Image 1 (cartoon, rainbow, N blue to C red):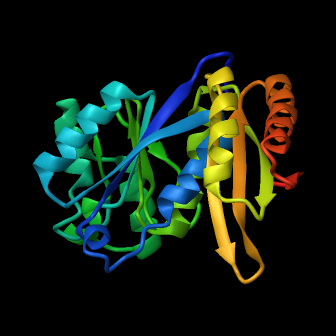
Image 2 (image 1 turned 180 degrees about the vertical axis):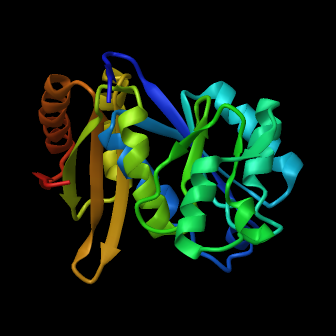
Length: 254
């Protein structure tokens, strides 16, 4: 994977499927994609979920691929009538679909004999598209332009991601460090956290409160591409919290 230093490289995820919006299926792909992209120096900047409606998929895809460096879609590339992602991607790029000979050969070798219409649907790829390997089972995904089209089944999607990573031109990898505060609420933390955040506008500082039988507090997560600035800011924030009267504050493993 090529690195683009000092440049923020961004991506969006487009989750496609009525089953996600209805609540029948719980999406876990977004979490896995975000973690995978972060390791490759790509920031996940937006995620959308759309139903199995052609116009909605096309509109969302065109908006996202124009705004971000990469778009990853999940879902809608199976054999049934409502699997219309390939159709929507082809329409968004203004190209025709064709049955990819490598996919036809792959499926013929696996299932033997004449492929039925449902299985042939999974061989359709937009003209000009390249394949994304599927090391788990079934046909591959595909990529065209800055869009990667992956399966919705989590195990298969994760396998396909391994072929996406080497194609990404990532920026500097974002690293994070965590400060744990116990026995103090966000009302006490807000002022010192805001002061440090304003002093370091290029960093991300977030507060994630916790409550439980063992007490309450917040995990303060600092993220940056500059390890030296990050280390200095951790020291600065701990000092600011201590000066504000926060007694139980320490850095912990993320």
